[in-house]
Every structure is written in structure tokens, then in C-alpha cells.
Length: 245
Image (cartoon, rainbow, N blue to C red; front, top):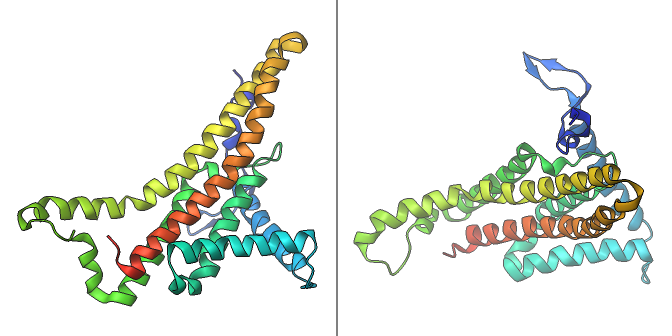
């Protein structure tokens, strides 16, 4: 199979504006372009949707307000009233992941969240932010989070390392979940697309039907993965604020 027709060719990073700083490759790539586009679309949408602030909202204002209420409700349910101050952080993460996922559904576009380096960077930002918040609020008492309550002292020798490892694995699990779902879905759609062409007009409608079904499923997955990323961030934030074990 030619490289251009490989199901994985759609994930190739391409330099659009080659740049090098101090021996490091900092080129502006197709990945960079779609991240900038995602931020631009979010900014333009929210600015335009809320420009009138009507008492009787129009369609776009309603979508913007529903997005706001959705994340606000998520924070209230999972973090409590103290999570309100972190709304801009969670809202920004949710909208960015969602737009990157949705932009990747456009034919011949690029799916930013199909790259582990991008999803891991996002997860690492969440992990570091939550850990810093925990230490600011609780100081070294936060270390008690790794000591399960009501457990015999002899078992703590085994359980404390397990708790520490599970805590530091959080950014890996958070990033791999998003990356794997987006990569697998788009790869499967590309594979079925190849079957449509190879089977021709008589049998090609069978994989075409699968593509239509997968496209609808991928739109659902795009939203669900943004939701899962945001709600897990809320749960980690809840642990940092309340030291729930």
C-alpha cells in the first residue's frame, strides 16, 4: 500500500513554516495550525454568541450558555462550591479538546488529539495544576492523601507505594484514553474508506454504510472524550481541594 494511502498517513506531522531556535525544531506544523484554529473558533464563537446578551437568547447564545451551564454544573457536582473559581480552567480544557476533536472530523483536516504528545501535554498541565493547588491549600498535609485510612500499619509499606504510583500514572491514563480513542476511530474510518474504493460501485456500498455509522459514532466519541477529560480533571481537582481518598 502506498504511503499516501496508508490509514496512518492522516496523522503525519508536516512542517508548514520551518523554524529552528537554538538547535531545536520549533517549526509551525499542521498540528500547530489546527490548535490555533481551535482556539480561534472558540474565541470567535463565544464572542459572537454573547455579543448581544439578549434576555431571550438566540440559537448561538443558547449554545454558548448551555456550554457554560454544562461545565458549571459539572464543577458543582464533582467539586462543590469551592470549584467555582476554577471554572475558566476546566471550561478552557473542555472546549479546546472538543474543538480539536470536531475539527478532526472535517475531511482532509488534522486531528490534533490523535497524537499522544498533545494529549499528554494537556494531561500534564492538569496534573501539575492540581498538585500545585493541593500543596497551596494543604501544604505537606497533602502527603497524607497517599496514606489510606483505617489500614493496619504493616500494610502501609505496600499500599503507600501503590498509591503514589497510581497518582503519578494519572496523566498517562488521562492522555492515553483520549489519544487511543481518536486514533483508533479515524484509522478505522480510513480503512473502510479504502474498502469503498477497492470494492467498486457494486459492493462498495457495504463499507460505505459502515463509514456513515462510524462518522455518527465518531461525533459522539468526540464529545464524550472531551467530557471524560473534563470530568476526570474535576475529580482530580476535588481530591486536591478536599483530600478525598
